[in-house]
Image (tube, rainbow, N blue to C red; front, side):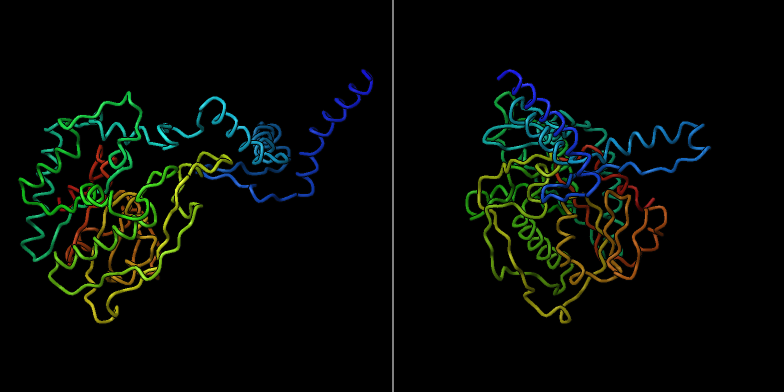
Length: 375
């Protein structure tokens, strides 16, 4: 009996060692055999006298094999799942697990609680630059619109750990910017207030447990509000959208569980039903004004942009400037570029509307250089 146990143990060890080699050789593909998140994959290398004697081959081959051994992706997910389930550890930076499986970004918590407050002097300087831009645009019959998207931490403070103290007297970048914009009469579309007003009346979640951004449903509500506000600001008949149908799903789609995807685990953290609308324009696109807009924004606007509806709503001369670094043109014939390659002052001259669209969780560096765009 003891001998049989030793043989069985030996067979198991050999099996564990051989199976990854077989998988690497015959490339067995599994449905879960994918890892999410940003990383630079290690590349294979070639053995020759130069790579050998310069010790390049050994290092590169070691990295390549380490990332490509059999069933690696499956085992990475399994390891992450065990660490999360047993130890409560994450493989994603700045992540915090709170009540009822809600996941939060620690950086956004610092913004919401005022820990990242830059101080009144810094904010006054930024607002002074934005007010100068606002006056310059007004003089030319153009508009500046600031849009503040909520963060999940501000929308669901009740799910944050009890150790995080929240007070109505808290001074944050968001509260100070909002106060100064009102004082300077700079147009502000505050989604943080709007979404809180809708919180108890909407039928479907606006934020998901395993996501950092607003849900797909929330994205379309935000886009609908933005298009109506643009009509108000430009005083021209621009298009808007309406919900045609809504499909309900218990499984998160698209970026609705982007945090969970980045964690690379097997567990489905989401426990609610999510809505996925099909939308249509209220007016025929050719009968509406299509303003030229320049949007400077973060990933919250990226979600709106990815609906492709802005391509049909704004002029082809429009641009989305992601964090004021990456240029995404609305003319599909143009390639994306970095800000250095864009003649920004030239583009600004015939722009109808400039929009700064950032989450209140991203105001630490707001507006990422765009405040001095006319200098």
